Image 1 (spheres, rainbow, N blue to C red):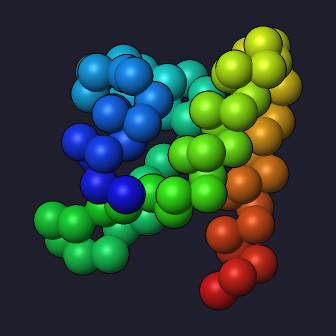
Image 2 (spheres, rainbow, N blue to C red; image 1 turned 120 degrees about the vertical axis):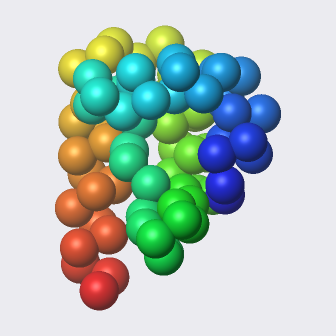
Length: 75
C-alpha cells in the first residue's frame, strides 16, 4: 500500500503516520526503489486491529517489532 492508501486505511494524516513510525508505533515502509516505498496490506491490517482492540503503546511497539522481524525472515 502506498502512503495515501495507508492514511485512508488508518485514518491518519501523513504527518501523524510518520510520527507513529518515529515512535515505533507503525512499521516503516519497504523501499522498492529510490522514489517508491510501500507497506504490506496485512501489516497495516494488523496494526489497525491492535489499535481497535485497545492495545497499549507498548503492545503495539512489540507488534511492530514482530512484523519488522518477520520481513527479515522472508528475504
